[in-house]
Image (cartoon, rainbow, N blue to C red; front, side, top):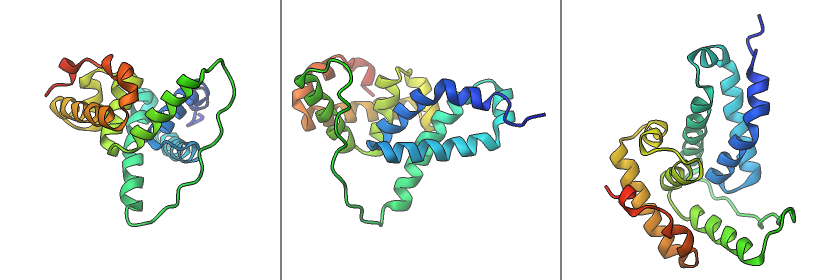
Length: 176
């Protein structure tokens, strides 16, 4: 019996969504690819058990977050020199304002703590509930609420030009 039965199909079907999550966590396409590849390699080793448990995607998403945090902890003492931003792809009908908003949001997200960024990605990009986010991050729902509140507050300070986007976030839901 093939220990990877179903794994290839899972990766083909969910790779784009998982890659977007990895990119939102890292803010860098090559790092996102490395992160996803690392997590998928580990997932493949345990695929039979994960598939039997019924929700391998939840495991992979949690592993992405945990691995991302682990990379940060390991690299904390190293000095890295950032490179120039990759050019926009030119696909779609993007107006200049949308590009500026996207860049402002990306830059502001990268200035948040990794935990705050993970909370915002899970809550607002992946549309996860407070309880799901708490489970994926291994913390309490109250921590998710306070981290969301702090992160949104920092985004309002770091990128006031995104006020329209941030107004959509329900402050009652983020309150501790």
